[in-house]
Each structure stands twice: as structure tokens, then as C-alpha cells.
Amino acid sequence: MSKDLFNAGGYVMLPLIFCALLLWYGLGYRCWALRTPRKKTIHDMLVLYSKQPDQLAKSIVEQAAQRAVSLNAPDRKHLRRILDEAFYDYFKEARKFSVLVKTTVVIAPLLGLLGTVMGMIETFDSLGSMSLFTQSGGIAGGISQALITTQMGLSVAIPGLFLHGFLHKKQQKIERELTQLKELMCTQAATGQTTG
Image (tube, rainbow, N blue to C red; front, side):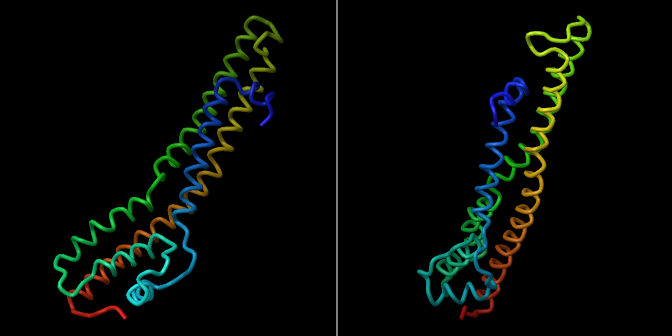
């Protein structure tokens, strides 16, 4: 972003740039955390980690399956409660920075709107004093500030909104798989089955 564009946007540009950085940090982390490198069924994961407990887990669900297998034992009582406690961190990881991203997507257009209002105030002040050019930019500067901040706010929010929707669907899928994993482990424990 050029210095002229930054100056033309006024005071609102700094918080908008900060919002953009926060948004892309949160989205980048969520893309990395919610990755699913290989598609395996939950049963396949349980079989794999029961046979190869040291196999590298590459996703949240694979890590949870590996942990579930390590916690499961023939004499283990209250497996559901143990898995609920063990899986809390995985659910938390799947939701991490979701609120930050949603909040930033909402705030960015509002900051753009604030810049628009400030630009229009400057424009009407210039019209009221009949000064086309002032130290702060006059009519042209006010309109420019109004348009630039609106554009910046929408430029931050719109891609963030689409990516957040995509990642939220991945998060919901991971949460469903974690729940299925718990249910499968508890069912096997109740019926005395072993994974494999």
C-alpha cells in the first residue's frame, strides 16, 4: 500500500490495516490447523494407531484417534468421561481464532463506514466554508477519504467472510468426526470389541 493511499484514507486506515493483519493471521492459523492431508475413515485410523501407535498424526482427528487408542484399555472404566476430557483440547483447537475472524469481518466494514462519515464531514465542512482546497484536502480530499476507507473495509471483510465460511464447514466436519470417534470407542468398549 502506497503512502499516498494511506494518507488519503485518514486516521481510519491504521485500524483497518491492523484488522487486515489480525484477520489473515487468524485465517492462516485456521487453514493450517484444520488441514486434512489424507482421507481415512475413523475405523481405519483406529486400526492404524492400534497397530502402529507411533505413526505420525497429521490432523486433529488423527491426533484424537491416536490418543483414544492410547487411552483405551480392557479394564478402563468410565471411558466416555476420559475421552470427553481428552478430546476437549481437540475441540478447542478446531475452534481457535474463529471468534477473532468473525469479529474482524464485522468490524472492518464498520471502520470503513466510519472513514466514509469522516470524509463526508470534511466535504460538507469545505462546502460550508466555500473552500475547495484546504490543508486537510477540502472537497476532493473528503470524497477521496470516504471512498478509500469504504473500499479498504470491504476489501478486508469480503475475502475474510468467504474463507471463514469455508473453514467453518471444515470445523463442523472435524467436530462431527471427533464425536463419531468417541461414540465408536465407547461402543466397542461396551461390547468388548477390540480395534483391528
